[in-house]
Amino acid sequence: MPTPVASKPKNLFRRAERVLVGVGMWVIAVVLEKIVMRALKKEGTPVPKPSAEPTPIVTRGSAIEFEPET
Image 1 (cartoon, rainbow, N blue to C red):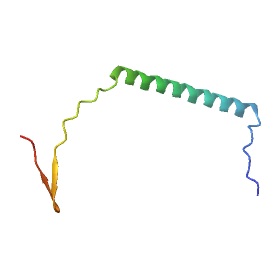
Image 2 (image 1 turned 90 degrees about the horizontal axis):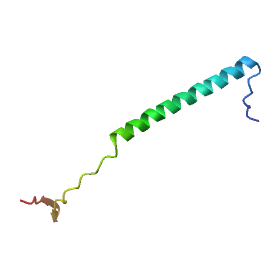
Image 3 (image 1 turned 30 degrees about the horizontal axis):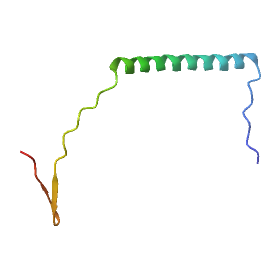
Image 4 (image 1 turned 60 degrees about the horizontal axis):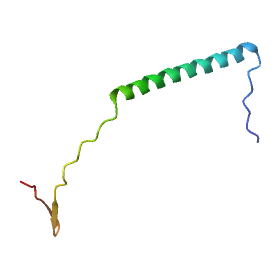
């Protein structure tokens, strides 16, 4: 059984409506992209903080002992 194919709008009003909706969505996408890009540019790239040295964890048998450095 063949799948139904979407038909093109037959009258001029429907075609104009689809074009206007497409243009409107494009404008909204461009404006949102500019807002996001400005926000990212203004905020800048966060500099990662240097991580502290890992705390040693020692295992003995089935128990895990935490030995903090002093």
